[in-house]
Length: 193
Image (cartoon, rainbow, N blue to C red):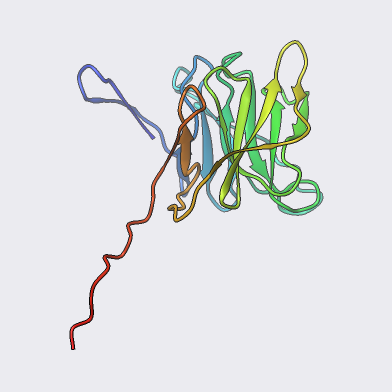
């Protein structure tokens, strides 16, 4: 991960983990940047550029029930960086979206029937995630206690998108527009005999 000064256009800091492909997943906050670390086992964590001696904090994994895969870490924008949403196969082994407090004390499952790639709206009161060819959304209240709308709603439908490592789409700050990479259509041609 490179951190660049937007005024000078020069790279200020560079961070890496041996043998690991790192994807920044959320907006930067004083607490750090949510990351997905694609190594031998995908994990989620936080990169804190203000802590150069130990910039990476990866979530500890409970491997007592077998390999656990976590990815798509998204830090909440409000309150800044105090909650994280991520995808995990913990529980019944199917991929679901979870919300967890940064201190690990509170955690709740958001999706009920498969979910990937969580994305917060800028206000922090909605959490979007991918479900097949749809983007679903849940209303979320983080303070004073975690409260999640029990039924996900369809926010967007999309097709022919490009899968990428980490999060493959973004939602506008007002939650009304979807941004993603769409595959180009093959040009139509007439056959000439």
